[in-house]
Length: 389
Image (tube, rainbow, N blue to C red; front, side, top):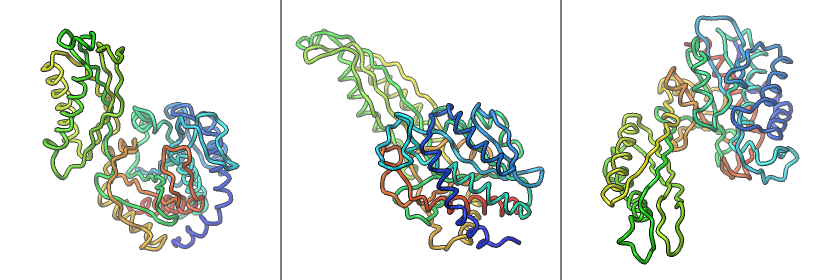
């Protein structure tokens, strides 16, 4: 029977190789659903390891398999895409692609998954069944790669799925777990407020969409302050406002608003979207204008299966010291891993990276000592649950 120390030590021995992989991926980022070279690079490593795979999952995705054929398998997932950000780090592995950067740690996620593949290949005899390694495109762009892969049947024979995400400002060696609703849903809100333009000196002869828009912004907050269940965290924010036309002495015809709704409860999420439409319509009509409303459904709330997550925390606690495996609170950010969590038992946990710069910023980076820790954690979960599900 394989011991936790064997996995941990073997993972640590892979550090130089994992650093090379991460640096290559970081230097060659690609945007959502365009991860063609990334896909080829991953396939070259899997081929070198003697690990079989299928490709063309949502065009650039890859699903590799290790272990014995079985009725049910365990899945590990890593996302592949980068962000449209110009990197500002002065490092020798800086992105060579202009305005494209791995600023959310997906290069780390892929590296940890490839590291897990190396570990699982080394200890393949210890697997109780088959493990799927899902290299998923398009996490950063709606409708998300997870939804596409599910539609293609990636979960058809999967019993449980695990994934990790980098966590800035959390020490290297620390792993964070959250049971239940752990990440928020995200919906995009687009509003066109339509009034009647005119001269600013003659407001009685116009219908001011800027004033209507301001009242809509204020009144929408009543959904959060007065209608939201008190123990159901939610965020409703307007992040962009633009008039079509207008000047210091001109009332424009139209104003455009854009915002986001984030919830940790799917029932409340549906109700909130209904109320958003009702309030916008009533305010606009009540002030003499009208509104056109588009709400694009984004990722659902990420639900970490409580029993699976507790067991996963215990497994990783045997791999590393219990005090470094911690419970963390829910987050209002979102992730398309959530789609998997609504299909099968899932656990999505956090990997401490020991750096201050937040994700989605041009200075994001990681302490690469986190790489074997992430790889060992994923591999250990796969080995354990391939025997115990």
